[in-house]
Length: 115
Picture (cartoon, helix red, strand yellow):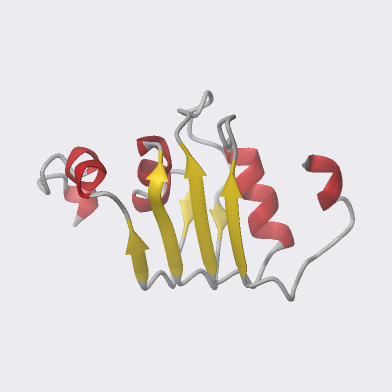
């Protein structure tokens, strides 16, 4: 997948569904945020835990992302997007997430970062 991003900015793409049997690591999200700069809808389907859960020195910002569907994604992706560990989504309006995942990542809605 890395090779397909070389030299291109896909400014017409507004929606992406990502599905894989290997974990999506931060460097992939960084490339997507750079090359799909006008992305509005992102759907992640991946049940694999991320291997590299360290905070990255760089933040990936999705400046136009309005809809995020992580209802069929591992809890790692919820933590990454909701708590701005490595990713910022300043325009997010719609979030699809499983209730169980939301309860876990927010520690039953008591985590201050979740507020």
